[in-house]
Image 1 (tube, one colour):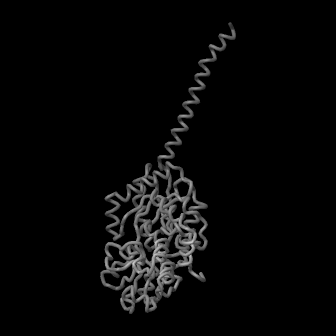
Image 2 (image 1 turned 120 degrees about the vertical axis):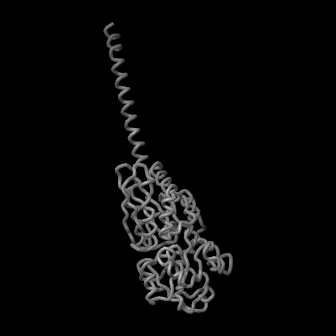
Length: 353
């Protein structure tokens, strides 16, 4: 009887313990869900792959100005330039050192999707593992010559040398003209050493060089619109898979290719231009956080306030790409045959840097 009474008295106590454990687990779960779905009280760093004053800096700061409003909890946003090796320094940091909680992301060139694949110097990352968030622009890079240069159109590149300024060994201003030289037989003479598109543009205006072998058309539109208004440069060639709508009479590299084998190499080299202003984070960001960042990106690129801000600064927003589509593109590029990757790698290789 006494044992039965004890069991009866213990039952409510056990029930209370079970209830408190259930409530406690519920509180922990709710807190975890809240942390995964809110940035309240947090600070988000947006890294920029290039120096202040260039195209990537312009796009990153535009994006950062509107990011907080579209993240739950409205975190504070800190912008930090992390230049070096045309995006490789920033990509290495994101891959190997940055926190993986969605509080550090970066904006850089779409070429980070293929840099390691093509054997870029210093690239220590697997682009397939990045958390791809979105791209603000499908870029069309162009080759330009100053108006005083005898090189006036694409055909002239095959008969006359054009001295072009370039940045580091992995920058498009360097690898693109080298690739076109090797695949198509043009006569770009590449002079490296300039720090990004802003310095490259100044070198052209000062007469230190006669052209730029690879610069995004959107960069010219936002940084040097006077080049277009005053016909100070001749746009020779579009380094892209398709013609820009504002450049209907300028050929693409694919149109100048002599055979299908050359076209396949050029397609692989220039495919990354589809995600030209890439926003991505470290590997391993929790699915909930990654989705918040991707949703914020989608909201930003359709936000009238953001679009008005971009228009005010003559910043082109052309065919933004979703993070999921970027991840698929990177996966597709990495599944290319080793033979084709080898030829593309040899085409873009910069010797002696």
